[in-house]
Length: 43
Image 1 (cartoon, rainbow, N blue to C red):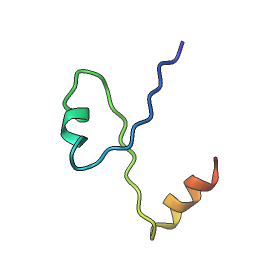
Image 2: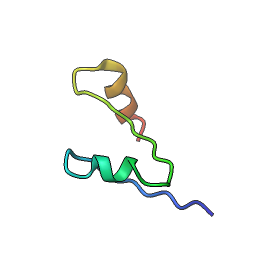
Image 3: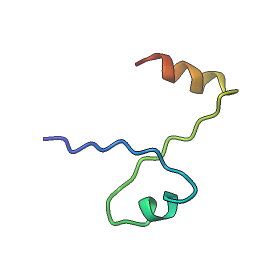
Image 4: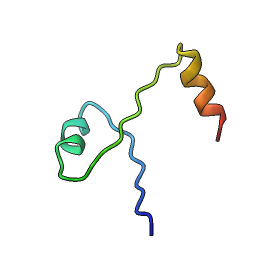
């Protein structure tokens, strides 16, 4: 059973999220980045 949790990280909660014992996948993107924008269309 998957236990996915999607969380928007900000300056105030980033360090806490990535310093935990649980693995974290961080996806950085920018509005001006064409490949980044294409990945948003997939949903």
